[in-house]
Image 1 (cartoon, rainbow, N blue to C red):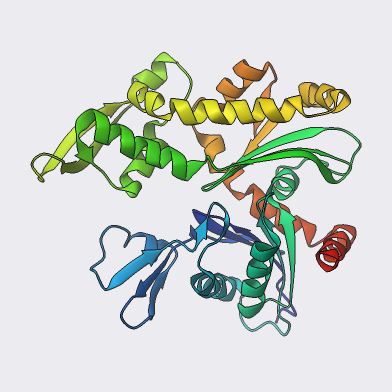
Image 2 (image 1 turned 45 degrees about the vertical axis):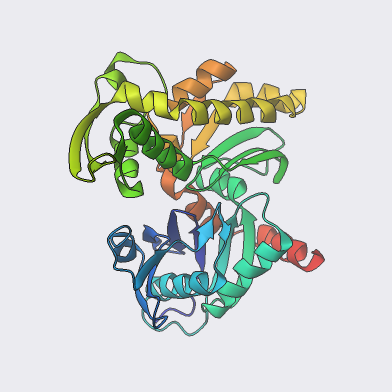
Length: 340
C-alpha cells in the first residue's frame, strides 16, 4: 500500500494532466464538467463531458471552469479537481498527496488562493504553485538552476507563456492570451466569413490539429479537411473541403501576434542571456508547439534555432511532478506563498 502519492498537475484551460510520482502521467483529460442545471448534479467530468459540448439539451450544461489559465468558476473547478485527484490516487494511500500545480505567470493573489483552496478541498495535504514556464522548462529537461539563459515558449489552451529563465528564476516573462482556444476561434470565424457556414469549437479544433499551419510550404498548402456545418442562409447542413493554405490565412494574425510577443521578450532580455539563448535555441512546449510550421516561423522571424520539446503536451505536468523531488525548490515555493 502506498503511503502517499504526490502529484504534479497541469491545470489547463483546455486539458488537465496529472503526474503521479513513480507512475508518470496518469490523467490527461479535457478541463470540462457537465452538470444538470436544474438540480446542480454533476453528470460527467473530463473526456465524457467534452463529448457533450454542443450536443446537450437545455437542462445540461458543459462548463469549462478555467478561462485563460485561471479559475473562473470555483465550485465547478473544485468538483473537477476532486475528480481528477481522486482518479489519480491508486488504492487507499495512508496520506493525502502533496500537489504542485502549474499556474500562469500573471495569476493574481485572489486567483492563487482560489486554486490552492480548490486543491485542498479536493484532497491535497499541501499545495505548491509553480509558474507554468518554469514547470515546462523542467519538464523539457532544461537545467533551470544553471547561470545561463533559457527561453521557453509554452503554448497552452488559454494562454501562451514566454519566459527567460536563469539561476532557477524567471528573469523576464510575457503572458499572452493567444493560444489554442484563440486559434480555434479564428478558424470558426474564417469558415463563417468565407463560406457562410457555422461550425462548433470541436470541429475547429479538429481542423487545427489535422491541417493547421503557419508557415508557407507546398506540403501544407496541399493539406485538406472535410468540414460539416450549418449553412447560415438555409439553416441546413452543408459539407465543404478546406485547404491548408486557407487555414494558414485564418491563423496568420494570431501567429504574428505571438511572434511579436516573443520578439518583445527577447528585446527585454539582458544581452548576456540573449547570447545564451542564441547558442541554445528557443524551446517550444504545450499543445501549440505541435502546430505545423510554428517552429519554422519563430526561427525565421527571430534568427534563432527552435527546438520542440519531447512530448510537449505533458511538459508542465512532468515538470511540476519533478519539483516534488527538489526539496530546495519546494521550500522556496512554500516561503513565497507565506510571504504573499
